[in-house]
Length: 522
Image 1 (cartoon, rainbow, N blue to C red):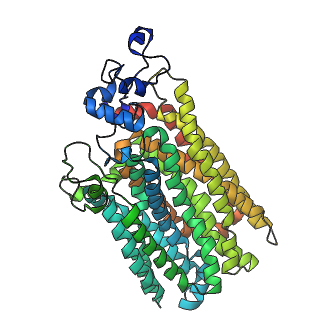
Image 2: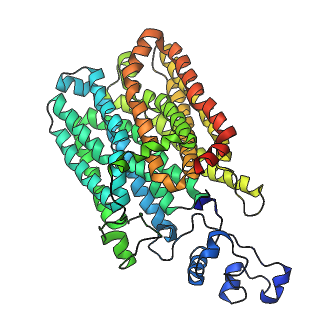
Image 3: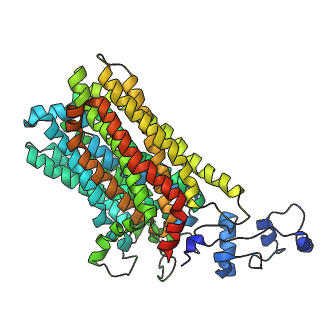
């Protein structure tokens, strides 16, 4: 079976035989507009050949080309036809929303000791308030995705933010461990959608050739949520009390809700089989009716998990999850416990340590996002006209991420064990690990979406589920590993895990990925 994503809308500049209808110096769009060249002539192939003349004219005026993948619909309501600024503003809202999931989970990390003193629980038990949210952030999108497919993304964003606001206030007023854990669980459930469905929004609003760059914005924000939560809320916990962490989270949720009302248009758009009624403005902002008439079945709530049957999805998901666990979750969760015990840091000093991860993640995104698209364009220039490199070509960049992630992980653990007094060397390791993690994140998620772009939202849900469940388990065995074999030996264990689960399967995927995609399509 040949997917629409494999079809290409192509046209060529007129050859010398077209000179009679083309004025010198005119570009293709000018030739069409002046009537010198018919846009629906034999120069059009692929999806574009099946479009009406009016549709082709519209796309040429809007984009200046018919080489568009995927092919947009006819009208401004299609998110692919939006102006770049409008797409970017919407993506930033969704990416920030995705960040708030991991930010909320990590916000209390510097305050574990404060929670321990206030609620009378152990520091490790206080850390479970983060682990609990990590697990729910992975599973809850299975519930939200079918609803967002049927009713659109916008209603889900609005419901998510207002309910998170209420539950964060509930956390602030909780005075027992059980009630705080229950409210934290509800917050994670409601704030979770954007952390998984965001990949679908990128696929709905941006063309394939620019997807790495914009997917990188979303993945960067997901990654930054953890260190930003620890960095900023350490100041709050130390100076005005850890309960203000929950009040601030509630205020942020309220601001998100307001911004979505005015700047968060609907990106769910069906190009076939559905009649679009009303103005573009109404469709984008004020229509809350059902978008997809397909009946809602119980199967839809577990369908994203079936993406695991594709080698081109399960391997990137597992490879990314292992790197994320050891270069992000381990570092951020263990910094408070290791540094509190060894250096006697307070909440604010613990928060300072996360600056290294923020810097590393931002640097890594420049390599994993922008460079990723540049790398694919470079590959396209080596291909015959009208052809694009296979998605596996993008995987070459992942090896740099694996190497940096492993090196940073080793440096962080060894230097933490070897330093009697605090110095910056463990944080240099944390920053290097963050660079590698971000490269791996963007490259592998973009690769999976490129292979199955019609299932972008399901892929996001599946990868998020895999990453979060993997991350949830980690804090339960990290302390025991450190205690039983020490930090240096733990560096060796983590390195072996990343090579065995991430590097080797990715090498196999690069070798056999094309044949696996062919089998999946049959």
